[in-house]
Each structure stands twice: as C-alpha cells, then as structure tokens.
Length: 374
Image (cartoon, rainbow, N blue to C red):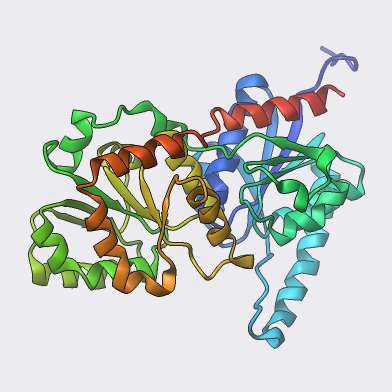
C-alpha cells in the first residue's frame, strides 16, 4: 500500500544537554511530558561523549547521539587546544545530525552538548528553545539566546540576561517520582531502618559527591553521635571509602553512610532538615517538597551561579546559607543547632514552598507544542 503524502508525520524533536544529573533529569522529564502529548513523536537526545547522559538517557528509553565536546579549562589556557579541536568536530557532527534528523524544534537544557547542536539548528532556521535552570544565566545559553525562539526560566529577573519578549517562567522540571511519596511515610523509614520518633538529617552532595560537605561531616562525626539525630549521609562514589573508614571509628548506629541513594523519594520523605549543594535542579525539588535546607554552594561552577541560586532563597528566608570556605567549622554545628528549632524549620518549609513551580515539564512541553503548531 502506498503511503499518503499528505499524512501527518510524527513530530521530530531534539533535546540536548547534560554532563550532570542536574541537566539530565530535567531533560528526561521534558521528553516524558512531550511524549504524553505526542505519543508518536521522534525524540532524539544529543549529549557529550563519556558523560552521564550517554548511560542514563537510554535507560529512560530514548535514543542518544554523543558529541566529543567538553568544557574549557579556565585556569590553563594551553590545555584548551585539544578542547577547541573537539569543539570543531562537535560542530561538524551537530550539522550532520541536523541535516539527517531534520528536527522541527531543538531544545537545550544546558551543558556542553547543547551549544553546538542548538547553534547548528538555529543556523538552519529551526526553532530553538532554551531552558535556563539557574538564577544567573550560563555562558552557553547567553550565547544562544539571540537566535532562540523561546527561553524557559525558573527565576524572576532573568531579563538581565535575555530578551524579555522571549522569556517564559516555567520553573525547573524535577523527577516526578519524588512527589509520589507522602512526607513521613512509614515505608520510607522502614527502607532505611530508621525510627519515625527521632529527627533525621539528610546530607547530599550530588551524584559525584561534594568534598567540602564530606569533610565537614567527617570533622564532626562525634558531635553527630552525641546529638542522637539520625543521619543519612550520601557521599558520592569518590569519597565513600574515606567516609566509611571515618564512620567506623565512631560507631554511630544512627548514621547511614552510602555513596548513592537509590530511593531519593524515601530520603526526602524522612528528612527533617537537608544539607545540600545549591544546584538549580535540587533547589527546585526542595521547593516542591517544602524541605528546610542548609545550602553549601559549590565554588567550582561557572560564574559562581550556585551562590546566586542560594541567595535567591536566603533573601526570602527560604533557606540557610553556609559558605563553602566556612563549612568545615560551621556546617554541622549549624545543622545540629537548627534541628530542635521546630518553629524555625516550619518557617523555612513554608517559605521555600512559596517558591515552588509545579508541573514545569508540562509547561515547557506546552510551549514546545505551540511552536510545533506554528
């Protein structure tokens, strides 16, 4: 049977970005939201070779192509010669992908790979959508903004960086499974072997871990034991051996040490207070879950954007900030000081919930649908 040339073809959509879970999880959430609206859509991810997305995206059921792109070394400029060569190779591959896949829209969520592919798409007149997670815009998105069709943001005041007529405030997409578990759910306590009658401190440092946060915990393991507070300490894979060795010396039965938390929904459900870096994705999750948090911004990110993310909450009394340089001395004592202050924790919870943006992935998908209909 001959194909009908007038038959509506499935929408072709590229989603690009990655490098960390903070970029990958929102990208997959957007893809899932688009798939709900367009079950037949042909969605292709484009990531950076060797990075986390090359594994996580196929696990979520999507195809992915990798570019040999990587970040610039800002401290040693001579090391950037091979980086520039890889950038040229990435641009050539990006153009080929655009030519062969022929997307109707390209979405960039930040990260190395989004630059070449969105630049190649815009050059061909293909509509592009940027998703800026942070309160301080990243370099890649600022460079892509002039030719972008639409820019989805999570914070107010982003007209400082982008053309105001292109901005839509959607919030940051989060992992939907986190929102399905009730706070203080009995099964969450059972999963960790914890007691619902004791306060619980959750310490997280991202998928790779956070050196300063881990050092801060190791410096105060005895104080944590004396406090009687239950602790879930996620160290990341690079720090787990040192953390286990240090914890063994203290022998605290209320301390759980793990490199990875398989059920973050359960971890957030039991947490009375969270210690975390200030990545945009994590902050969005904490807002939706109304979790009191002490933020320790990473100093090793572009334009110190995590500090700016944290200050956006601190200014609204929605979080507590401890600077990375002061964390070793101040972080755990500050947490243990806060834990018994029920009224203070309640106020932090109420204020951070006011900043929550619900169904962000669905709202971004709706904007993409409008572009496709044009």
